Length: 320
Image (tube, rainbow, N blue to C red):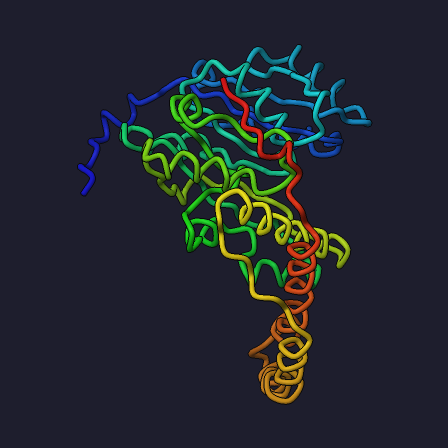
């Protein structure tokens, strides 16, 4: 059992932190992101923000350079050789001076206490990875409400992974020494890199992972079926890649029989039940359509898993 840390020690624990954010065509997100970063309560003399443009075709790099000119703790970097968020993160890691490297994404909104809360568990020297929580930005569309109801983005799903827990890079911090020992991200991987790097660290017994629920970033859910399909298809690709890299079990195949059974059960049992509840004001449209939307995402994920094939160069691990 961990020994409690007294308040004085906790307040004095202020390691140097490097925050790395990969950005591709993120111009519309940058004003809010930069404002969120500069509003962090973590001492500004103990943090640097490394914003890495990944060969954007919009004004991302121009905006980053202007922001860097206006703030000494913001640094604009570029990764133009490999089109991959993981390659961009590696570029940021190599430039980082912090003993802890934190990650978030361009379309995330870190709350003011995010970094302070994310760093606190590292006061225990056995902790080498900390995952914070990912909460939804307010949304009004049916798909946003469905995703919020399912807590799609929450770290609780990845932290409970049956193979090995991991944190998503939208809200993650890793001790630099762990990156030195286990290697950086696989730069040619297009999805699943967060699980891969956490698993390499944890399975080598370099240290342990902690969850910091108070370290919150907000993220917008998908608003269209096309975006939703792309999201879940990518999850399926990740399943396949992690199966080939780590031996993770694949999802059971989504057969026509299983799909038809679930749809028929919804029509004959769930829909009438939820309809009566809706009339009584005890259910919403999201409750009525939960099963068909779930079947839509399951089919997209199954299709991604079936079609994906890990490229040979995606097996490459970069090193500090």
